[in-house]
Image 1 (cartoon, rainbow, N blue to C red):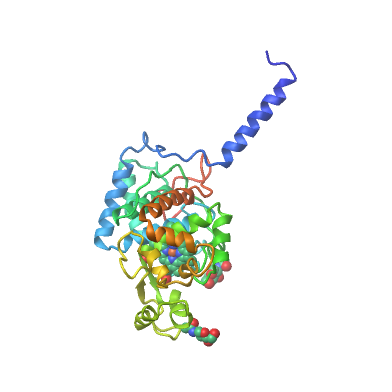
Image 2: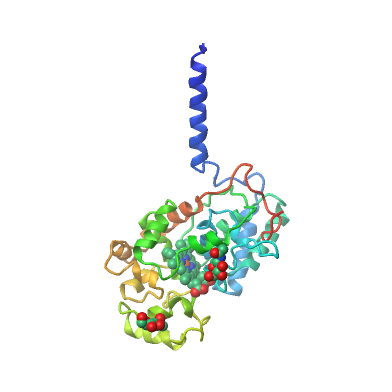
Length: 322
Ligand code: HEM
Ligand SMILES: *[C@@H]1O[C@H](CO)[C@@H](O)[C@H](O)[C@H]1NC(C)=O
Ligand SMILES: *[C@@H]1O[C@H](CO)[C@@H](O)[C@H](O)[C@H]1NC(C)=O
């Protein structure tokens, strides 16, 4: 029998339980849409597959969109909102302007998903699945994606400017930014392995190839050919982040770092005599440890501050709030 005095104790326990549940993203789950949208995964995968067959780089671009969404106030689809005359979103923030791409492909995925189950799947979850499928299609690991995120009704250009580390970052800055989001130093190194695919603009690596000394000299010379020294000329010229296999998701990125062939300053920071050298060596020698740590870290990144329950909305069009 519950006595009069045990009731407050019981409700306190209940309250604590709810607080704990609320703070651990217990709501994201791998089977979130299994009843409401059984054909979700095939709809996403076939659209991602065609986009990558049309342009191999697109897999990298989709993977990066998920990173740039999650690092700015959580994985909530805020990155996908277009600017309007009365609204400034994140697409023109410093890390995204003239750089983030693949938004049309996200629209195509959303259309394919709306066709099989209208109004059910969030744009934030579509980014999570598209990132996973892209990595898999380009030869990387596979993981079960946790789902159940909802879409933000707002976005923040200021937060986007401040939350995504620039390529000029040193190791301490990278570590502290990732740690602030619950990602370990090992997660930082594993996730940076994303730079085994994709391209970067001259403006992001010019200072490194002309001014830094911890760079392989023939690699620097080759890179200089398509990236003029003078700022303002050739800023948008592209170079692969992994010169060996730029459209294949493998561990060559880490081998490059050991050979001082990291193209971004932030890449080479991971192997420059500091605390992460041993992790880089480990991944370069053991591709399967990279694969499994990468998958684990992607799941952790996908857990950053999702909107769940009745917060946010399921956007009809990823580019605007309902
Ligand atoms: C550790 C801190 C990171 C920094 C400083 C950084 C910086 C950059 C920069 C500067 C570019 C080229 C942008 C341009 O020149 O237009 C880039 C491209 C890319 N980043 Fe990162 N990044 C980081 C982490 C990540 C993470 C965690 C992921 C994914 C999980 C990621 C995925 C990518 C991909 C795939 C590309 C190529 C995109 C394309 O070809 O369209 N990056 N990154
Ligand atoms: C974000 O950065 C861009 C580019 O540097 C700048 O034009 C814009 O004013 C910044 N936005 C905010 C809100 O700080
Ligand atoms: C290289 O460093 C010098 C001296 O700090 C600076 O004036 C120059 O603009 C830098 N060049 C590039 C391409 O970053």
